[in-house]
Amino acid sequence: MKPPPPNALVNKLVLLSLALLMFAGTLGLGAVWVRQEIFATANRIRVLEGEVADVTRKLDEVGAQIATAESVASLLQANDALRLGLATAKEVQVVRVERDPVLELSRKAAAEAIFRSNEAARNANAFAFRVVAASYPR
Image (tube, rainbow, N blue to C red; front, side, top):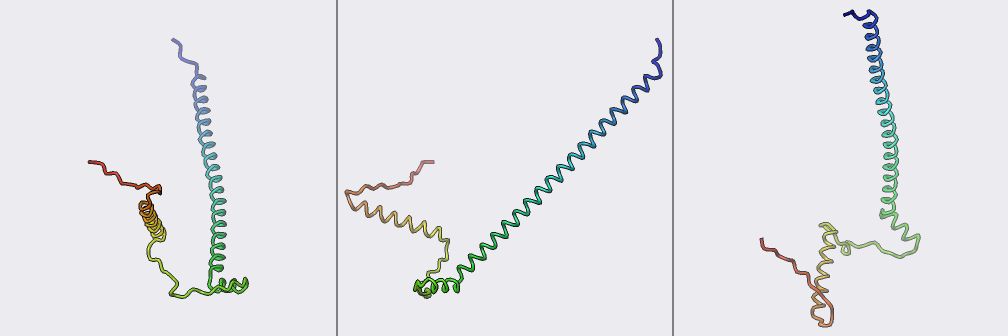
């Protein structure tokens, strides 16, 4: 058996070093691509943050305009300018709601519905129905 020629080992070393350089180049190219994606994402985030800041600023401006329009002085001035002849409410006329208005209004609507159903039950010609809660045995 003959030993391999001396240049065969050199060919293998050159081929392996070339493969190592290609692998390292691919890793470097991947790192550059990831950095580019991070930079592009950071720019998109910066633009979105600017848009959010603009919308927040506009929302604050609209809130300030609403607060100005709802002020007592502004309402009195509009009343005089439009000659509406409206008077300010007296404290006796003001009703303070201490609970959640949505719950209070739904309670009031439910009470009115029950009252109407009771009235309809008294009238024999009226169409009415009752809702009975079902109870299931456990």
